[in-house]
Amino acid sequence: MLITIKYFGQLTEITHTNEETLDMLEGTLIYELLETLYRKYNTLKTKDFQVAQNQELVDKNTKLTGQEIALLPPFAGG
Image (cartoon, rainbow, N blue to C red; front, side, top):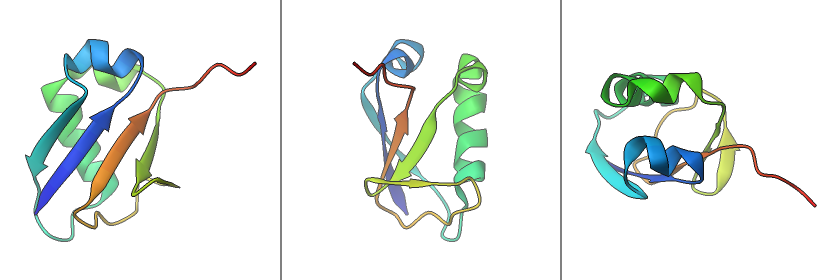
């Protein structure tokens, strides 16, 4: 299943892209996707971010649904 991953803020500097598509196995969990991304972008594991799936925040044990994933660094309020 194809997963679209969107990167925001400082994460775009690490990945050198705003968006990419990865082919993941059916039944994959968020943490498994993150492990794949950490192997590809080693510095990513040192950054603080939340994961959203289809515009809803999810935890690392959530199953991928084959739709959009966004990696969201902390945002400054004001």
